[in-house]
Length: 412
Image 1 (tube, rainbow, N blue to C red):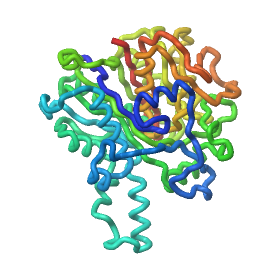
Image 2 (image 1 turned 180 degrees about the vertical axis):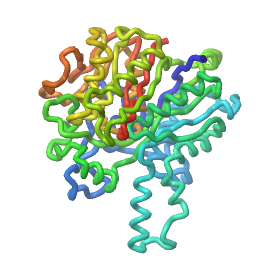
Image 3 (image 1 turned 135 degrees about the vertical axis):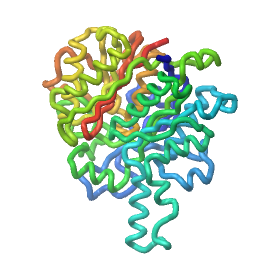
Image 4 (image 1 turned 120 degrees about the vertical axis):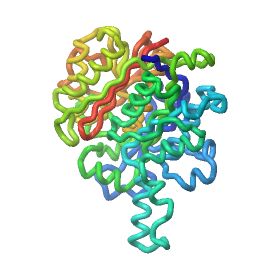
């Protein structure tokens, strides 16, 4: 099997519109959650979200790309453009069939769907539906438009596995390169879910926090008084490259992707298995593939969304898998970014990779009183970042439907 390394990173999310700003703000424990500005959310139980600020799509997108694409695709193009720029790849010198795009999207064009259906019902748009309705709506348009923008003609598709989606996409890209099916992939995930239908739907499920009076402390993984997740938006992009190809061109290499695994809980539509059986197996399989002992993992970026059930189930899975390893420290960065759904795994993979390059772990903020059900052996980085030599890092992403996806990165 061929080796796979990460040679480019890009992002746009509530903590920053580029990787350096995102990383700096995550280490400083920043949080931009506030009252939703996109629409009037006053009718919902949840009225808060982590929104992107000062988005300027024209920095990387042309007029037609903006006009013809939903926000989730714009975020994808924006982050992918950054990542390719960061990689230093000269695409014109590479066979375009050797470069693919595997992208992850959980919901797709929710804003497009809402707008077009409203226009149809009210008769505000003639003829009723825009000809761009379907192209803007469908989830695969993110990967399609990335390929069109840069002329990438290799394997191209979009994965959907709810909030595990971005990790699923990255895992697929990893395996295709290992099998020799491609030399390079643009991979990651994007989501633009801060819309009335999406927020209203999750609010009706009572899945989201209702700390509307104190939004910056609403996302509080592991805290005794957590009451649900905070919705976020954005995208993260990684350039995965075959090691020898990267080495030959003198690429900057951030880390090596050494293990990736998926399992299913086969338990419940929206709740994880209470003992974290599927999550534990995913972590075990990823470590096995990486050929690492469980005591060798230095940092784990948890999925931990700040839900009463999910956080504890994941920590039980960690305890089961790593058996109280004194080397392992964990943190939950959704306390700062909110939950980006299908894009969550991508931005958290970036944080895991940056922890390796900079030997520092971003913190979990908003913990006032730890839940007493948390296993005592779990070592959580709280409030402030932690300096530590990080040779290996893991990132978890789990999704409705019982999807579990885990990635393991190593320094090189």
